[in-house]
Image (cartoon, rainbow, N blue to C red; front, side):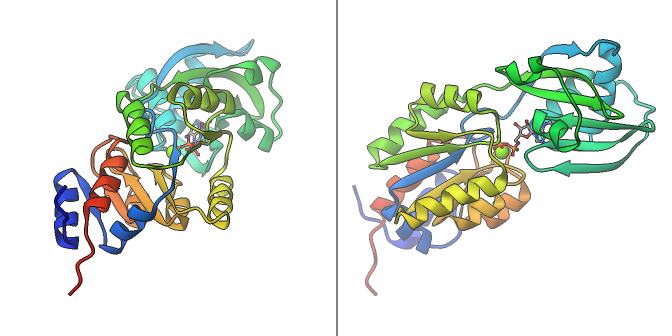
Length: 287
Ligand code: ADP
Ligand code: MG
Protein backbone atom coordinates (compact mmCIF):
# COMPACT_ATOMS: atom_id res chain seq x y z
CA UNK A 1 0.00 0.00 0.00
CA UNK A 2 1.01 3.61 -0.51
CA UNK A 3 2.66 5.08 2.58
CA UNK A 4 0.80 8.08 3.91
CA UNK A 5 2.20 11.09 5.71
CA UNK A 6 0.58 12.04 9.00
CA UNK A 7 -1.79 14.46 7.28
CA UNK A 8 -2.60 11.81 4.70
CA UNK A 9 -3.27 9.31 7.50
CA UNK A 10 -5.57 11.65 9.38
CA UNK A 11 -7.35 12.52 6.12
CA UNK A 12 -7.77 8.89 5.08
CA UNK A 13 -9.17 8.10 8.53
CA UNK A 14 -11.59 11.00 8.44
CA UNK A 15 -12.98 9.80 5.10
CA UNK A 16 -13.77 6.53 6.94
CA UNK A 17 -15.59 8.43 9.71
CA UNK A 18 -12.63 8.06 12.10
CA UNK A 19 -11.36 11.25 13.76
CA UNK A 20 -7.84 11.21 15.16
CA UNK A 21 -7.40 14.08 17.61
CA UNK A 22 -3.64 14.13 17.00
CA UNK A 23 -1.05 12.46 14.78
CA UNK A 24 0.64 10.95 17.85
CA UNK A 25 -2.33 8.59 18.18
CA UNK A 26 -1.50 7.15 14.75
CA UNK A 27 1.85 6.12 16.27
CA UNK A 28 0.19 4.50 19.30
CA UNK A 29 -2.37 2.71 17.08
CA UNK A 30 0.55 1.17 15.21
CA UNK A 31 2.03 -0.23 18.44
CA UNK A 32 -1.28 -1.60 19.76
CA UNK A 33 -1.49 -5.25 20.89
CA UNK A 34 -4.67 -5.23 23.02
CA UNK A 35 -8.18 -3.95 22.42
CA UNK A 36 -10.54 -3.65 25.39
CA UNK A 37 -14.17 -3.02 24.56
CA UNK A 38 -17.32 -2.11 26.37
CA UNK A 39 -20.27 -4.36 25.49
CA UNK A 40 -23.42 -2.26 25.47
CA UNK A 41 -23.49 0.14 22.54
CA UNK A 42 -20.06 -0.94 21.33
CA UNK A 43 -20.48 -4.62 20.44
CA UNK A 44 -24.23 -4.73 20.91
CA UNK A 45 -26.71 -2.29 19.42
CA UNK A 46 -27.28 -0.60 22.75
CA UNK A 47 -30.97 -0.44 21.98
CA UNK A 48 -32.93 -2.51 24.46
CA UNK A 49 -36.53 -3.65 24.25
CA UNK A 50 -38.72 -4.85 27.12
CA UNK A 51 -39.51 -8.57 26.80
CA UNK A 52 -41.39 -9.53 29.98
CA UNK A 53 -43.08 -7.80 32.89
CA UNK A 54 -43.26 -9.64 36.20
CA UNK A 55 -45.04 -7.78 38.99
CA UNK A 56 -44.63 -8.90 42.60
CA UNK A 57 -47.70 -10.19 44.44
CA UNK A 58 -49.86 -7.25 45.41
CA UNK A 59 -48.53 -4.97 42.66
CA UNK A 60 -50.32 -4.20 39.44
CA UNK A 61 -48.12 -4.46 36.35
CA UNK A 62 -49.35 -1.20 34.84
CA UNK A 63 -48.76 0.61 38.12
CA UNK A 64 -45.21 -0.48 38.82
CA UNK A 65 -44.25 -0.01 35.15
CA UNK A 66 -45.61 3.55 35.25
CA UNK A 67 -43.64 4.34 38.40
CA UNK A 68 -40.44 2.87 36.94
CA UNK A 69 -40.93 4.66 33.61
CA UNK A 70 -41.54 8.03 35.27
CA UNK A 71 -38.19 7.63 37.04
CA UNK A 72 -36.30 6.16 34.05
CA UNK A 73 -37.46 9.13 31.94
CA UNK A 74 -34.83 11.11 33.88
CA UNK A 75 -32.01 8.87 32.63
CA UNK A 76 -30.27 8.63 29.25
CA UNK A 77 -29.16 5.03 29.89
CA UNK A 78 -30.17 2.69 27.02
CA UNK A 79 -31.99 0.41 29.48
CA UNK A 80 -33.93 3.40 30.80
CA UNK A 81 -35.01 4.30 27.27
CA UNK A 82 -36.47 0.79 26.80
CA UNK A 83 -38.63 1.12 29.91
CA UNK A 84 -39.87 4.56 28.88
CA UNK A 85 -40.60 3.36 25.35
CA UNK A 86 -42.49 0.34 26.66
CA UNK A 87 -44.62 2.36 29.08
CA UNK A 88 -45.63 4.61 26.22
CA UNK A 89 -46.24 8.34 26.21
CA UNK A 90 -48.92 8.05 28.92
CA UNK A 91 -49.12 11.66 30.03
CA UNK A 92 -47.80 11.11 33.51
CA UNK A 93 -49.21 13.32 36.22
CA UNK A 94 -46.66 11.85 38.60
CA UNK A 95 -44.24 14.37 40.04
CA UNK A 96 -40.68 13.10 39.95
CA UNK A 97 -38.14 14.57 42.36
CA UNK A 98 -34.78 13.92 44.07
CA UNK A 99 -33.55 11.70 41.25
CA UNK A 100 -30.19 10.11 41.89
CA UNK A 101 -28.45 8.07 39.15
CA UNK A 102 -25.99 5.59 40.60
CA UNK A 103 -23.42 4.32 38.07
CA UNK A 104 -23.65 0.58 37.46
CA UNK A 105 -26.78 0.35 39.61
CA UNK A 106 -29.72 2.42 38.35
CA UNK A 107 -31.94 5.15 39.73
CA UNK A 108 -33.54 6.24 42.94
CA UNK A 109 -36.11 9.01 43.17
CA UNK A 110 -39.44 10.16 44.45
CA UNK A 111 -42.36 9.49 42.09
CA UNK A 112 -45.78 10.77 43.07
CA UNK A 113 -44.59 10.94 46.67
CA UNK A 114 -43.31 7.35 46.74
CA UNK A 115 -39.64 6.39 46.91
CA UNK A 116 -38.90 4.33 43.80
CA UNK A 117 -35.82 2.29 42.89
CA UNK A 118 -35.31 1.08 39.28
CA UNK A 119 -32.12 -0.73 38.39
CA UNK A 120 -30.36 -4.02 38.98
CA UNK A 121 -30.42 -6.32 42.01
CA UNK A 122 -27.27 -4.60 43.26
CA UNK A 123 -29.28 -1.37 43.56
CA UNK A 124 -31.88 -3.06 45.76
CA UNK A 125 -29.16 -4.61 47.94
CA UNK A 126 -27.54 -1.20 48.30
CA UNK A 127 -30.76 0.17 49.77
CA UNK A 128 -31.45 -2.92 51.85
CA UNK A 129 -34.53 -4.03 49.88
CA UNK A 130 -35.20 -7.76 49.96
CA UNK A 131 -36.23 -9.50 46.76
CA UNK A 132 -37.12 -13.08 45.77
CA UNK A 133 -34.63 -15.60 44.36
CA UNK A 134 -36.24 -15.44 40.88
CA UNK A 135 -34.51 -12.09 40.42
CA UNK A 136 -30.98 -13.48 40.70
CA UNK A 137 -31.98 -16.55 38.67
CA UNK A 138 -32.92 -14.43 35.63
CA UNK A 139 -30.46 -14.93 32.77
CA UNK A 140 -31.64 -11.80 30.95
CA UNK A 141 -30.87 -8.20 31.81
CA UNK A 142 -33.53 -7.02 34.22
CA UNK A 143 -34.80 -3.80 35.70
CA UNK A 144 -35.88 -4.50 39.25
CA UNK A 145 -38.30 -2.06 40.83
CA UNK A 146 -38.95 -1.27 44.48
CA UNK A 147 -41.57 1.09 45.89
CA UNK A 148 -41.21 2.52 49.41
CA UNK A 149 -38.63 -0.11 50.32
CA UNK A 150 -40.69 -3.04 49.01
CA UNK A 151 -39.84 -5.19 45.99
CA UNK A 152 -42.48 -4.45 43.31
CA UNK A 153 -41.41 -6.65 40.38
CA UNK A 154 -39.13 -6.65 37.40
CA UNK A 155 -38.96 -6.17 33.63
CA UNK A 156 -36.60 -8.10 31.38
CA UNK A 157 -34.88 -6.24 28.58
CA UNK A 158 -32.77 -7.52 25.69
CA UNK A 159 -30.22 -6.07 23.34
CA UNK A 160 -28.73 -7.57 20.16
CA UNK A 161 -25.16 -8.12 18.97
CA UNK A 162 -24.33 -5.74 16.09
CA UNK A 163 -23.95 -7.56 12.77
CA UNK A 164 -20.60 -5.74 12.40
CA UNK A 165 -19.19 -7.08 15.70
CA UNK A 166 -18.08 -10.46 14.31
CA UNK A 167 -16.30 -8.70 11.45
CA UNK A 168 -14.64 -6.40 13.98
CA UNK A 169 -13.20 -9.38 15.88
CA UNK A 170 -11.89 -11.02 12.67
CA UNK A 171 -10.44 -7.77 11.34
CA UNK A 172 -8.69 -6.95 14.64
CA UNK A 173 -7.07 -10.38 14.72
CA UNK A 174 -6.01 -9.96 11.08
CA UNK A 175 -4.43 -6.67 12.18
CA UNK A 176 -2.28 -8.61 14.66
CA UNK A 177 -4.14 -7.67 17.87
CA UNK A 178 -3.25 -10.54 20.20
CA UNK A 179 -5.74 -9.88 23.02
CA UNK A 180 -9.38 -8.90 22.78
CA UNK A 181 -11.19 -8.13 26.02
CA UNK A 182 -14.79 -7.18 26.79
CA UNK A 183 -15.66 -5.37 30.02
CA UNK A 184 -19.24 -4.69 31.01
CA UNK A 185 -21.50 -3.57 33.77
CA UNK A 186 -24.12 -6.01 32.52
CA UNK A 187 -24.66 -9.41 34.16
CA UNK A 188 -21.80 -11.85 33.81
CA UNK A 189 -23.95 -14.65 32.28
CA UNK A 190 -24.93 -12.34 29.44
CA UNK A 191 -21.40 -11.00 29.04
CA UNK A 192 -19.95 -14.55 28.79
CA UNK A 193 -22.66 -15.52 26.27
CA UNK A 194 -21.78 -12.57 24.00
CA UNK A 195 -18.01 -13.21 24.41
CA UNK A 196 -18.46 -16.87 23.42
CA UNK A 197 -20.51 -15.96 20.40
CA UNK A 198 -17.93 -13.40 19.24
CA UNK A 199 -14.88 -15.52 20.29
CA UNK A 200 -13.51 -12.73 22.47
CA UNK A 201 -10.50 -13.93 24.50
CA UNK A 202 -11.43 -12.56 27.89
CA UNK A 203 -14.62 -11.05 29.28
CA UNK A 204 -15.72 -9.73 32.65
CA UNK A 205 -19.25 -8.71 33.64
CA UNK A 206 -20.99 -7.13 36.60
CA UNK A 207 -18.37 -4.38 36.70
CA UNK A 208 -18.60 -0.89 38.11
CA UNK A 209 -16.78 1.88 36.21
CA UNK A 210 -13.90 1.67 38.74
CA UNK A 211 -13.60 -2.10 38.16
CA UNK A 212 -13.18 -1.46 34.42
CA UNK A 213 -10.42 1.03 35.28
CA UNK A 214 -8.75 -1.56 37.51
CA UNK A 215 -8.61 -4.12 34.65
CA UNK A 216 -7.21 -1.53 32.27
CA UNK A 217 -4.54 -0.54 34.82
CA UNK A 218 -3.62 -4.20 35.24
CA UNK A 219 -3.16 -4.70 31.46
CA UNK A 220 -1.06 -1.52 31.30
CA UNK A 221 1.08 -2.78 34.19
CA UNK A 222 1.64 -5.99 32.17
CA UNK A 223 3.16 -3.78 29.49
CA UNK A 224 0.30 -4.05 27.03
CA UNK A 225 -0.37 -1.20 24.63
CA UNK A 226 -4.09 -0.93 24.61
CA UNK A 227 -7.06 0.81 23.18
CA UNK A 228 -10.27 1.07 25.19
CA UNK A 229 -13.41 1.44 23.14
CA UNK A 230 -16.56 2.69 24.81
CA UNK A 231 -19.69 4.68 24.24
CA UNK A 232 -21.04 4.76 27.74
CA UNK A 233 -22.28 7.43 30.04
CA UNK A 234 -19.56 6.52 32.53
CA UNK A 235 -16.78 5.22 30.26
CA UNK A 236 -14.85 8.51 30.18
CA UNK A 237 -12.46 7.65 33.07
CA UNK A 238 -11.44 4.35 31.42
CA UNK A 239 -11.15 5.99 27.99
CA UNK A 240 -8.71 8.47 29.59
CA UNK A 241 -6.56 5.69 31.09
CA UNK A 242 -5.96 3.76 27.87
CA UNK A 243 -3.00 4.38 25.54
CA UNK A 244 -5.65 5.21 22.96
CA UNK A 245 -9.16 6.03 24.13
CA UNK A 246 -11.73 5.42 21.44
CA UNK A 247 -15.33 6.63 21.52
CA UNK A 248 -17.97 5.11 19.29
CA UNK A 249 -19.78 8.21 18.18
CA UNK A 250 -23.04 6.64 17.04
CA UNK A 251 -24.62 6.66 20.47
CA UNK A 252 -21.73 8.01 22.51
CA UNK A 253 -22.03 10.35 25.43
CA UNK A 254 -20.51 13.82 25.25
CA UNK A 255 -18.06 13.20 28.10
CA UNK A 256 -16.68 10.08 26.43
CA UNK A 257 -16.33 11.80 23.03
CA UNK A 258 -14.61 14.75 24.74
CA UNK A 259 -12.08 12.53 26.53
CA UNK A 260 -11.40 10.21 23.58
CA UNK A 261 -8.24 10.36 21.43
CA UNK A 262 -10.05 8.82 18.49
CA UNK A 263 -13.74 9.16 17.70
CA UNK A 264 -15.52 6.69 15.45
CA UNK A 265 -18.50 8.54 14.05
CA UNK A 266 -20.44 5.50 12.91
CA UNK A 267 -21.59 2.64 15.13
CA UNK A 268 -19.27 0.08 13.47
CA UNK A 269 -16.74 -1.55 15.80
CA UNK A 270 -14.86 -2.87 12.72
CA UNK A 271 -13.69 0.74 12.24
CA UNK A 272 -11.22 0.09 15.09
CA UNK A 273 -9.43 -2.31 12.74
CA UNK A 274 -9.73 0.24 9.92
CA UNK A 275 -8.08 2.85 12.16
CA UNK A 276 -5.26 0.43 12.90
CA UNK A 277 -4.80 -0.40 9.18
CA UNK A 278 -4.58 3.30 8.30
CA UNK A 279 -2.13 3.88 11.19
CA UNK A 280 0.09 1.07 9.88
CA UNK A 281 -0.01 2.59 6.39
CA UNK A 282 0.98 5.97 7.76
CA UNK A 283 4.61 6.47 7.25
CA UNK A 284 6.63 8.61 9.59
CA UNK A 285 7.67 11.63 7.61
CA UNK A 286 11.22 12.77 8.24
CA UNK A 287 11.26 16.52 7.83
P1 ADP B 1 -22.24 -1.24 30.55
O1 ADP B 1 -20.85 -1.61 30.94
O2 ADP B 1 -22.96 -2.41 30.00
O3 ADP B 1 -22.32 -0.04 29.68
P2 ADP B 1 -23.42 0.35 32.78
O4 ADP B 1 -22.33 0.65 33.75
O5 ADP B 1 -23.93 1.45 31.95
O6 ADP B 1 -23.00 -0.93 31.91
O7 ADP B 1 -24.64 -0.29 33.58
C1 ADP B 1 -24.43 -1.48 34.30
C2 ADP B 1 -25.73 -2.03 34.81
O8 ADP B 1 -26.33 -1.10 35.72
C3 ADP B 1 -26.77 -2.24 33.74
O9 ADP B 1 -26.62 -3.49 33.09
C4 ADP B 1 -28.05 -2.16 34.57
O10 ADP B 1 -28.29 -3.39 35.21
C5 ADP B 1 -27.74 -1.14 35.63
N1 ADP B 1 -28.23 0.21 35.29
C6 ADP B 1 -27.47 1.32 35.11
N2 ADP B 1 -28.24 2.39 34.86
C7 ADP B 1 -29.53 1.95 34.83
C8 ADP B 1 -30.81 2.57 34.62
N3 ADP B 1 -30.95 3.86 34.37
N4 ADP B 1 -31.91 1.78 34.70
C9 ADP B 1 -31.80 0.47 34.94
N5 ADP B 1 -30.64 -0.17 35.15
C10 ADP B 1 -29.51 0.55 35.12
MG1 MG C 1 -21.88 1.40 28.58
